[in-house]
Image (tube, rainbow, N blue to C red; front, side, top):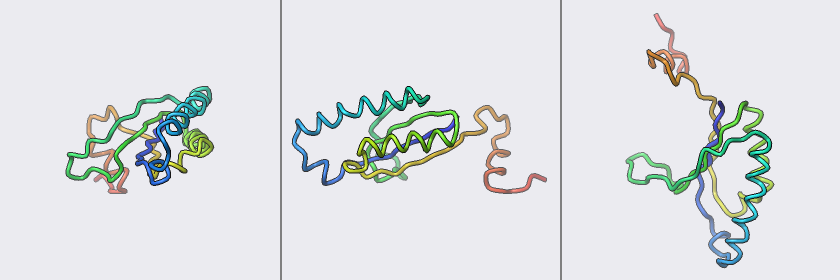
Length: 119
């Protein structure tokens, strides 16, 4: 599974909107999100970020989506752009293809990721 995690924070343009316009925009996202679902994306969820951790990111929110391939990550990100998301939210997008979830020796996964030869 490939993951697209979007860390985000409302920007000045978002804060300039009135509540009715904010709600109208948020409702408009439903069509885009459901379009992504129809294209195979799985919405894993949204949350405020726990900012109490010492190395927490500066963004305050996250959306996490799962897809089958790196190509689908890019397609889903295009949908995000079409929704004019970046007009209202400063975002950091993270795309990953996770490996090693059931590894009995996780150090082997770290070694492979960091190009450290196993002796």
